[in-house]
Image 1 (cartoon, chains in turn purple, green):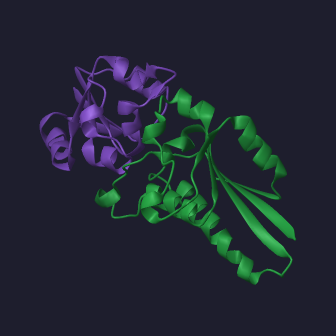
Image 2 (cartoon, rainbow over the protein chains, first blue to last red; image 1 turned 60 degrees about the vertical axis):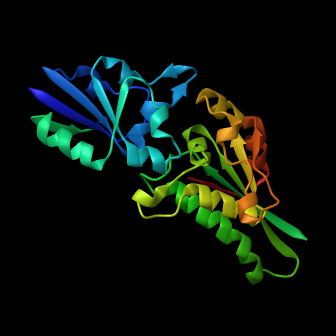
Image 3 (cartoon, chains in turn red, cyan; image 1 turned 90 degrees about the vertical axis):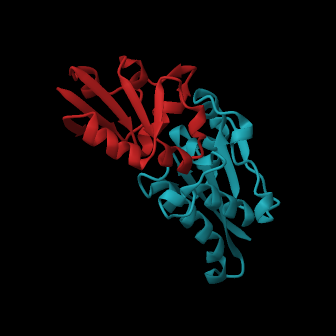
Length: 98
Length: 136
C-alpha cells in the first residue's frame, strides 16, 4: 500500500504516525504541520522527519508563516499546491489526515 | 487616575485557528475603549507571546495564499498603537529563533514602540499585576 499522511499540526510526538506501516509512506506537511520542517526545539529537529520516509512541505504554508522554502530541513521536499495534487494522484493509493 | 491593566497572552500558533488573531484584535481594540471610560480611568493593555505562540512573531510573513492579513501586520499595528509587546526569551531559545527573525519594531508602520524579548518571569509579573487576564 502507498499511504500518504497529511500532518497539519506542529508537535514533538505523534503516536499514530509512529505506528503506521506501509510499503511506501509519504508525509505531507501542511498548515501548522510545516513548522515540523523548519523548527528545531532545543536543537532537535522534529521526530516527524526522523521516520526515514519521504517528507513533503507545502510552500504556500511556509511563506504565510514567514519561512523561506529554500531553508527547510534537507530531508524535506518543498511542493506547491499543484505539487500536492500531483502527489495525491500519482504517488499515493490511500490518504489520511492527522 | 485608575489604570486597569489587561494582559493578553498568546500561546497558540497562528493561522490554523483564529485564537492568536483574536488576541491581537482584542488587544488593539482595548486601546480605543478609553473613549467610553470616565475621566479618571484608563486601560493599559500588555501583549505577551509565550510557548509556541512566539512563532506568531516571525518576520516576513506573506499570507497572500490565504487571502488574510498577516499576524506580522497585526503585531506591527499593536506597536503602532503603543502597546507593550513581550516575547518569551526561553521559548525563543527553545525554538532556535534568531532575534533578527523576530518582529522587534514596526518602523515601516511609523511606530516608535519596539518589542521586548524578556524572561518568562517578567511576563508572569505582568500577568500578576494585571486586573484582567485574557489567555489565547
